Image (cartoon, rainbow, N blue to C red):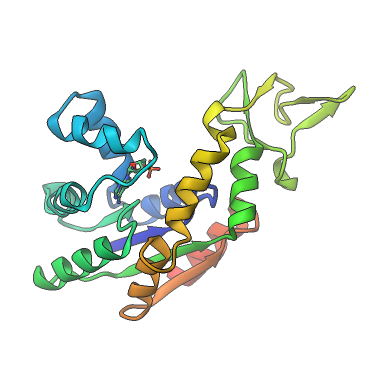
Length: 223
Ligand code: AMP
């Protein structure tokens, strides 16, 4: 099973991706994770990629495309893969589609988690971290996981712990930069999605409801 998953930052793509990964038991390949591992390991690739990642820009296609195409040929991918974070622009989509054709590899599902830009941004900026447990979800913009409040102070809705916001979740410039790439219908990620829509069936799910509703919808559509 070969699957691509798209969704803007803040759409819950990571969460839904993990659910899809479990369903099919294929490796979850995330471009961002590969880059971060290479940066940590101090590899040549990591050193080159870091300069772009630090600026919030895409790593150039000459580096990213061969890296991903060779990753998909590794042993653990022989029964399929779930690719997340690639393609991120039109040229990567074209290269990906051509490589798949050449290798006679099928693209079984393309998933798009749809969410408007304003909501995606609010969700990122609304995230709050619980001091006791990272897995206690709190978000001031999502009704289902709104923090508890006592005497005007927000507290973790699960355990009452202290809440804080992650600095990068509050960096509007960085969020806008990433969303500029995602919502760009000329040459960005949206252009990549349209490219696939013209060639294969893209399964669209509304990312607005809660995690459970979105995953139920997605599982229904995946069949
Ligand atoms: P992510 O964890 O998916 O947000 O990715 C972190 C960073 O890695 C991005 O901001 C980009 O700089 C870089 N990156 C991830 N995927 C790609 C891609 N497909 N093409 C180019 N750069 C990428």
